[in-house]
Image (cartoon, rainbow, N blue to C red):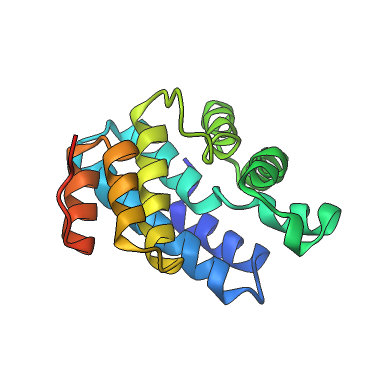
Length: 169
């Protein structure tokens, strides 16, 4: 099993010179790890979730090279990320089944309909927790995300607590 620390270091090197993005994936990983642990994910699923959380935005760099910095949308990240992640994870000795699932998660982490699997749901929630704060979105937007996106009890509680809200139906 590839060590999470080795992947963290590799991702920091990959995103070198971009402190904002490094901070982002470290925070997403921390929230994903917390939510997954609180939701009592099986160890294999927890591991896959953590790998995906660290690499979820890996497609940004390739997207910038291909399309320019102003053109890197969530969809471009989903399109460019899996191939970059696969190269990195293979080089680090990650198991093929983990690479396959991580590439799927990276390729869908900005797609919020038809979320399949607790690892997928938690990755989306962790990314939202960080993005809602980093983007400085108004509380109305946070409330909408809380209502429409958050499904896990632990993710809901974190979002409610962080932003001082209550989930409405």
